[in-house]
Length: 431
Image (tube, rainbow, N blue to C red; front, top):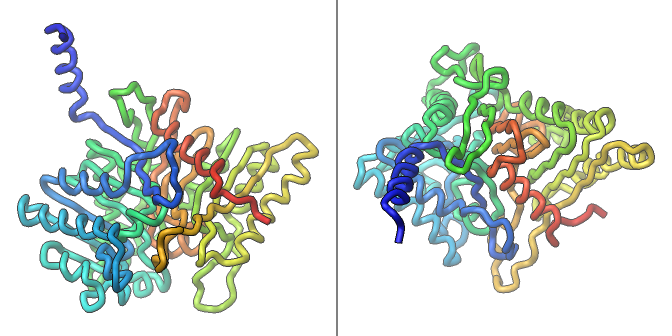
């Protein structure tokens, strides 16, 4: 039986940390992968908890919505029900708790009310705006994925508003709770989208000061993310792309990535679905070369002897020439292995065939992660690594620079996740 003193200490502890910032990595780990080690909290459970905890507002930025099973298949699989559960939770939040719900999506045919049952249903309970990058900057889409609740909690990561992202696509994101400073900074990006979602909107040459970032590369947010477990302090800031959607004080996503790579001293581990030093989605059939990230990685190996591991994804939509670029990176090893230098290893993460499913699920079975970890920094984003995603596509990222990685649960968590995936049977060497 606990003593009165022990009970008092526990009550005091819970009271002190009740409103403390909390952060953790969330994943979607499809059953096909059968991972038993280093499993994170699930994306679907976390989204439901965020939605159900809302007391005032929910703001969602997303590329598209396919939460209903029939959005994807005429005869949906049972696991698609989780998408319906998410939509029902959003509806209940408005009906039962009078939550103010706003949604911004990419302006594409599949997202209009005549073609999208999800948004047609949610339109009765929310404000929805559609962002047209083609009209605003001549190319691109909104590729962002985040949820902000009560201007203090948020999810940011790779998962789309798609039941497959909760079941059959491997996803990774970060949740930060009880942190109005960072949540309100992310909200500034949402408000940019919201403004540009007006029908006659014009992209400003200079964003008004009310859209300025609170934190950036030169002025990061400094605090613990899990003080109740003696977490180390982080230097944190949010990034945005393209540059047209960066206010005067917002760090551009690409600039942050290059800085992280350039400052790494020991290792760089990257998990990203696509890696192409090209413009992939130009209207012409010719893909212009774009070596900015590629050059930075090569410099890290050649000039600073950094160890790099790059885990890309292989699935039905992988272009065959991605392997060419990955092999090209590995070619540096021939010189450096003979000179005691750095190294670049590349692998492709490939899902196994699902033995119990007769009808395949379209656009599933892929490692959709978009993150990087170095000896100093964790970066989690929403963009694939080709030129289009940084030059004309809407995306966001979060940079967490840890002062002492030996005492950081979140840093350790994502480091173990990468090692789990890299050493798994699904990570294949490139032939």
